[in-house]
Length: 186
Ligand SMILES: [Mg+2]
Ligand SMILES: [Zn+2]
Image (cartoon, rainbow, N blue to C red; front, side):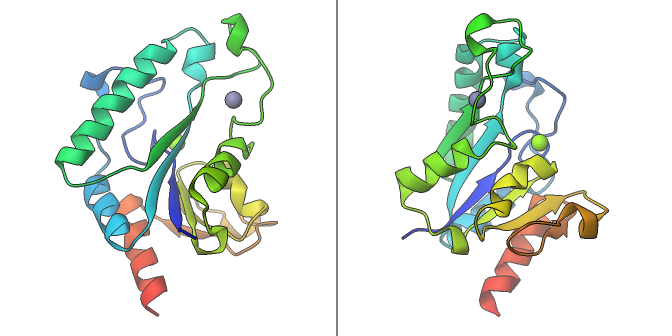
């Protein structure tokens, strides 16, 4: 079985400008690329799990998303980082585009994308981490023993209630990678 880090995209890997889809607007958060490199070297599959309600809202198309994603994966590959797969949810119940305006199991805090990844990659959830700037990025930690790292959270006691394992916090993805490094070397 493999272990993974489930990574949110906007606000975690790149600066969140809101409904980002153009390459010109894509800026890595500080230390993100180094963090991804560290996590890959530790033997984690890098799996991106991202809500893209901008598609359902009609702000950009699924193809726009795919284009940016392909560019990002290529760019990361050139920087020595291999992302195993990007899972995205294009849905939003109140969206303007009819075929995406549905209640789904994939939109976080739904755990559909995580469960799909678990099956596709035969992941050991107990050995895996989830990292994101919103609590909903860590929803899988309420179902499985995935360790959650919340970026920029402050009320950890209340926020982490109900998680299978205690919540961690970090300032950014690089600090999260450093915490994971220390944890598994212990
Ligand atoms: Mg985010
Ligand atoms: Zn969905």
